[in-house]
Image (cartoon, rainbow, N blue to C red):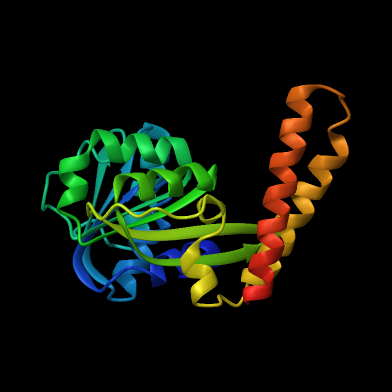
Length: 229
């Protein structure tokens, strides 16, 4: 079964295991891919909305995997019991929503071997939360698809609080340390984004001056990271 580059990279970060849950599964592409490629033996496809879950069920049935993939209707990880699955995937949601899901189902999260997150907005807010809470970042990856970067973060519950430069909320430290093939392009993309924002700040106010200073500091730090690659 062919799936997008983004979904394939998420699936490739899943450890070989007994069972995983895919939160916000939509068409159940990831659970189907994981079963068909012998990455896990069973899976749970979860979604808060009935429509996407019905699409998932139809897709699962068309692949004759209804005995290996369960569908559950409900928000986040609320329909999962602690120790029921080895790992979880939460992809295609905003960073703030992912934070809320982890907060409301901490007992489930604590018992997972791994959790793969793919925020589509506010990845910096999610990373800041991960560091503040002391969760362990196992791996990070980047995908460039249809001219858009996607960040993928694999974590595990821990209480190892670590203080890092705030620039690493925005750019994964793991990506820098491992010199991910796309990291330099990603850094330049962020630098260009902030330079464009600077051009749009035209007000001559104290708050505008403060915002400009913050953005210039980010650009400086991002350019420093480019030199580390």
